[in-house]
Image 1 (cartoon, rainbow, N blue to C red):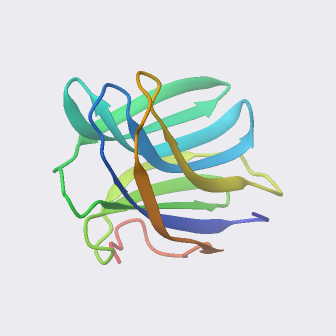
Image 2: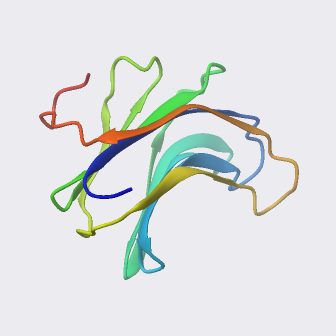
Image 3: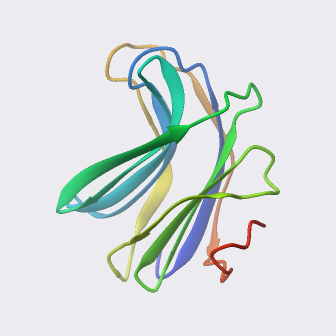
Length: 141
């Protein structure tokens, strides 16, 4: 993706085992990236993000497990990243804001992994990338 953008996707999967995960990933290079989505941790399905800018951090939050899946949205604009989630695709609470490196190009797309087992099945739908939504931080639409 060239320049500022918003990407969103709907994720649904059969998450069972520690570290089963799926969501969105944005990469500048191997030292600057973010992944966000749902992940099994401590026996529960959690919302999470890993932000790497030289070093990595991991942030998690409670996810009210929904059989209808989860929407994820990442906006990168002017050196700031905003991660949002939604259960219905209409209301988008903030999951995480953070500084993110400016770049002429970003690689962005759905991601999943299951490092502890084989056979994780995930369905990604409604994936789209568009110009950055210029919304106020507390605009949940």
